[in-house]
Length: 95
Image (cartoon, rainbow, N blue to C red; front, side, top):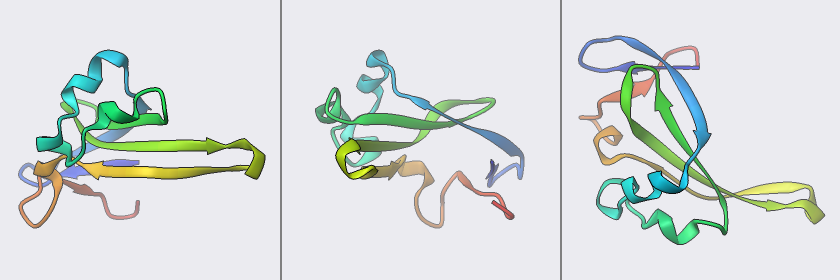
């Protein structure tokens, strides 16, 4: 999967990985609209980054419900600079 940088039109490969304990301090309410550290240890928290982009572009929290054979999306957010008409990154066509 790829995303496109709006200004340069460059394509970047998407990387999805778990948020490390040290990265929770980067997930501030002012940038991601929620205090993500409250989900630490309660949900699986993943980050969306891109190659050659040194920041977390989006965050996803999942809760596992093995008895019901499902996972629940608890919370999903883009960084503030990637929301709305003036966003920095957008999904590449064909994704």
